Picture 1 (cartoon, one colour):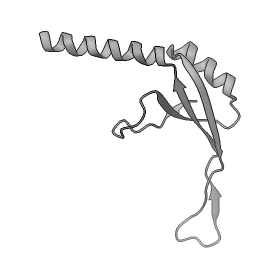
Picture 2: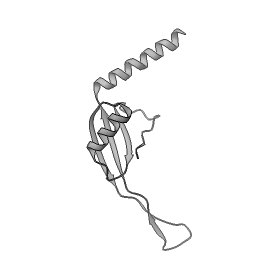
Picture 3: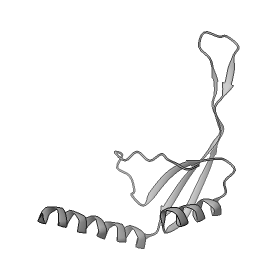
Picture 4: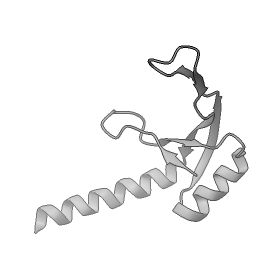
Length: 99
């Protein structure tokens, strides 16, 4: 249903998380789902609809198909939630250094 598409190696704003979802899911449904299942504090949800690409099969002229359409969702987390995550990460790092 939800597929995380952020590249963890790319240095971006850590308060923003990108997902791909089915095109029929609305913003309130996305916010409720992520809040209930993952416990995220969400400030804002932005969506973009994408039509599936039309492709041709190699070696077979005139045979085309369309990939699935999807909705790209960018979720912005609250500052309070990000501060809590940063504190937890620092505590883990300090604990790892002390042992």
